[in-house]
Image (cartoon, rainbow, N blue to C red; front, side, top):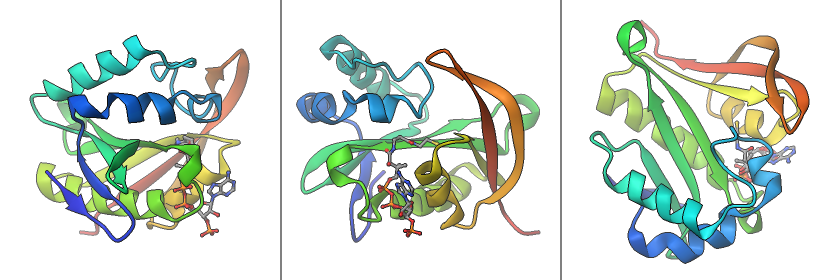
Length: 172
Ligand SMILES: CC(C)(COP(=O)(O)OP(=O)(O)OC[C@H]1O[C@@H](n2cnc3c(N)ncnc32)[C@H](O)[C@@H]1OP(=O)(O)O)[C@@H](O)C(=O)NCCC(=O)NCCS
């Protein structure tokens, strides 16, 4: 899998991405907007475990965002199962040095289209912590629609937050 876009390339993680991953992922401003499974501080052991896990996925759904030859962010789909089998949840982050260039907007649009086609999905959604304006904006710019606010759905760093549910649904 490789999606070449004007601002970045989406491609599988590789063992050689470790140093770049550690450089960009170890940032509380990133981890603060993600699930706790994305740790802060982000240690070498965390990076090694992530790359080892990504390389053995039966159906690869977690990818690096490459800019100027280096993996500087991540984007992935969490596939639903059972009655949720035609849906997926999208997640994404980018190294702070690259924020504000439209990179994730482009990546989210491309991975949404790829996921729908590749896995025969009818819906991709995302849960955004309510204060995360940038996280929501990249979805809105790609046609994701706000479906609701899940009140007090999240505890992050001891703070209780609402979650915003955004969805991209294919038209019948
Ligand atoms: C949120 C994040 C993915 C945005 O990536 P990015 O490549 O900088 O986003 P883009 O450059 O494509 O910007 C898209 C839009 O979001 C806006 N935006 C980005 N960051 C913002 C912020 N912190 N506050 C307000 N708006 C923001 C941009 O202005 C742009 O909107 P515009 O075109 O209307 O001006 C990145 O900041 C990040 O990795 N944050 C930490 C992890 C995270 O929040 N992940 C998402 C979890 S749901």
